[in-house]
Image (cartoon, rainbow, N blue to C red; front, side, top):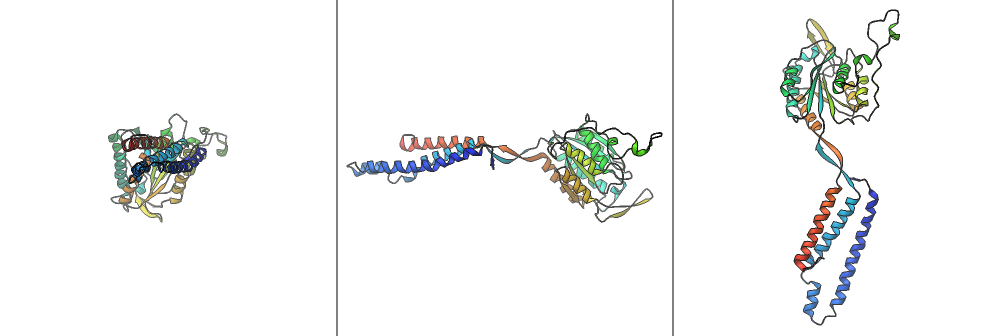
Length: 348
């Protein structure tokens, strides 16, 4: 727990002085009581047999003062609250390697089922968009709260060649910020076409959209979840795309599926060897203040999405709790006064 105004905590030093004052008043009362001729009156004055009742109301009042002083220091605490995450983009790999059956029944089907389960468990107000990527990246479904449209978009995936993880991040960002001028052509090297009479290294390309960088992960209204089973073979450098996300405060959670060591897979008469690039996926997640998850089986993949669902729907926030201490002080003061009136017909 931290405090916005910690200087007020010095006032807690008054409490021991109040305790000394209370003890002094008790002794003074004792000295006055022995002047009475009747011992029964002395016992009544001293509250014989009622020591607990005698001291409880002042003790409660002392605790009330302590709570009020702590409230004055404006305490802050980490509290789990519902997240204000409004939009989540699912960027899903549909490259040919996703037909591998090391994740049953195969990587693509397992990813589709896990993604649909993830969407089902999200609060209804959260919008979800779907980006499918292989050699290029395309928006399969714009952000929506319609779960049926999202499921239909996920079921319509068609396997393609190559893997462009950087493109997936860029298209996801462009979907989140449609008016920000984010375009793949502004990333990396110029296109392959050479302008007439101009060398390719001198060809002009659109300037990237300028943005004032914010702390990574500070944009709490949206997040990107990218699932892939291979390493980038074409397109934008994923680290460059991750920097663009980090500059906008958007977290990019990465999920790796498949073998880290590599596996040879056949697709449409082609034979390819795919390897999960965990190093890059971890770097993308770290640079955007997010996390990387590895899913080696369908069960692991389902658990990953369950974890992400809980992370994205609730979050820890530093919240001022001075009102709670003020309420506690008021209740303690009322209880102290009530017990004093009930037992002694006076307040303290």
